[in-house]
Length: 311
Ligand SMILES: Nc1ncnc2c1ncn2[C@@H]1O[C@H](COP(=O)(O)OP(=O)(O)O)[C@@H](O)[C@H]1O
Ligand SMILES: [Mg+2]
Image (cartoon, rainbow, N blue to C red; front, side, top):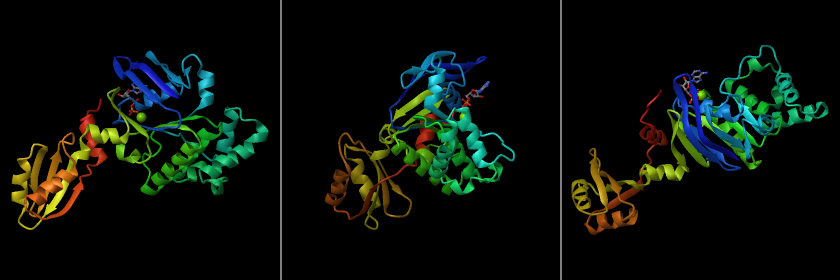
């Protein structure tokens, strides 16, 4: 549904996006992750026809964003990272304005607006002024606004930034609902864990280049997050467990942790699994009280992938 080929965008001598290749399948929620300045907004604005690429091309549903701008705009709902200020404008007036801008027929506008207000759970705020809404409500209104022309593709630039946990959950639920309606969603964030649960695929961008693209499981695999375990053995057995395990060929690393009888173990998962670790401990004559995979926070994984370089 979204395809980017060798996309480059320069601002003077600064290369904001560098030969970027990316595909997003229809019906996917794609998380576009990268630190500030990585080139997320630039890419999303090009996809939304608001910015011309310097080189390369981008397609929405097979249509070149440069050549078929009008048709692309009909297909895409773009929510910018900054919503702008609308003094004294009421929620329904705000939506009426965008419905008119997207040439939603006058007689259909009321039902369209009621529909998007219902979906974003803002129906009881219809007559409130936009600037009286909480930040979470404003973000949902931003979503309502990009839904008035019923686009197939949503391009959402950091919709969850600055929201409290509850408002973030509401946005996440809303996006999942939009996915079930068949929308393709590209959503950006500078925080990987913010999108962790809801994305089918993620792409990590840094300095205008994609450093990783794949499923969450593939990120875990790439960073060897799935082959680290924590074990607890009987009292006073930790040192011996380390000694025994470290002599085994499928163990990459093993160390005792603090004063407890806990050890951390990294295994070569092409050779062994958790079961072999458990057997080795028990056959070595020790008690095994606990053995579980270590969950490295995805944010730590993100830091490892991007090394925190910001332009
Ligand atoms: N209009 C502009 N003029 C000059 N430089 C810009 C402009 N917009 C963005 N940049 C620069 O391009 C880079 C990428 O910016 P942006 O796409 O906004 O990144 P992100 O959204 O990932 O934070 C940054 O270094 C930014 O300073
Ligand atoms: Mg941005």
